[in-house]
Image 1 (cartoon, rainbow, N blue to C red):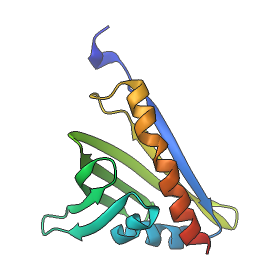
Image 2 (cartoon, rainbow, N blue to C red):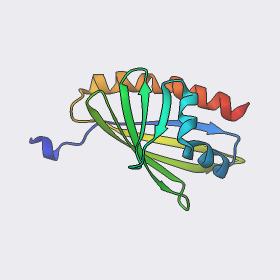
Image 3 (tube, rainbow, N blue to C red):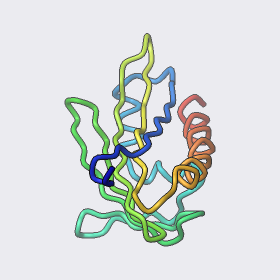
Length: 135
């Protein structure tokens, strides 16, 4: 079977919070708040719509957001360590709070095991964001 007909592995991460959908959306729509997860430092906005920063694993990296306020979409492209990740982000109502999900599709350059390993650290970022949101 050719690579073209195969599907890449997908990993979905989530964070549930007592904050409203709008509060959660607003928090993650501010790129500087990404630093509060602990993996990103020195976030700077560039004139071309990209944000550059230092990532504790990927080193010098950049990110560009595609935001849709109405549907609470915060998708972004992440480029770092020679890889490009398309990350699909949604903020959903959940009882009296909200849940944000990040859907990662494995870049072709990574094996399934490398993909899983890369995303283990994302759980630490989620905990950092949860602590800020809930306190």
